[in-house]
Image 1: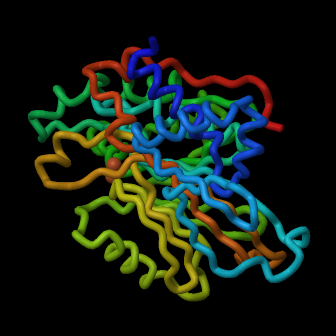
Image 2: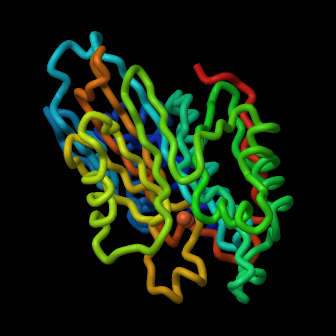
Length: 337
Ligand SMILES: [Fe+2]
Ligand SMILES: [Fe+2]
């Protein structure tokens, strides 16, 4: 009989195929499920906390995933074939070297991106956990100490998929290595890993088909209202120079909104709640985002959808040392189609 971990892994795997609005019949055909097996799977999904249901839509039975967050400006006004279409994956705050890191969840997101044929991932900072000499508890909260161990771990363990490039900024935790010894994480990572491209410390710009994207890792404290700091940030953007999309890391929160015509995505973390956050009473959201963007020739967004791939405490490996000892590097050599 399958143990709980194996069953959970099985449910997680199959759940990834159960796309929002996908026809149930198509799913059953593809994965060779009969009706009884599907009922059993839906029951398992319920037990393992997957927010999925089946609804009849236009005469077809389809899956409905409640974790899908849609942020629609308007449906593409012209034929979608005239528009540029891009899909991008967004991750943040991996905090490699912290004992609460969740590399296996980052790997799950990269696997999903690979299955979707996504070639671009953006990482919004705090790649590594950093070095805090003034926090006496810090050494016991880390399994990798200092610059060499943490930067080396990224080089060795960060997911590597042929044809996929990760563009990243560095955040407040990464910067501690510079403050302590003028060591820059990016210069080592990007020298060795050509698929990891550095965009800047705290902030960086990226664009596709004329759509400007700003990556931001603000640093500083959090606020009770999730949207307060990002709104303040958007208000400070000059109107002639605003990005179309603003991606924010650092807060370990998940939220999307549209403000001043800027699509803002607060990107959750891929590290479980740390002792520091618990002491400060801060919450910690886990997951990543898939952005689906249609834009016109001038780089104006015609359609924007931010789909969250959320994890919760049942997905976390909190058994001491499991993630740091057992996770292998995700490496896929087959090129993305
Ligand atoms: Fe962080
Ligand atoms: Fe940070």
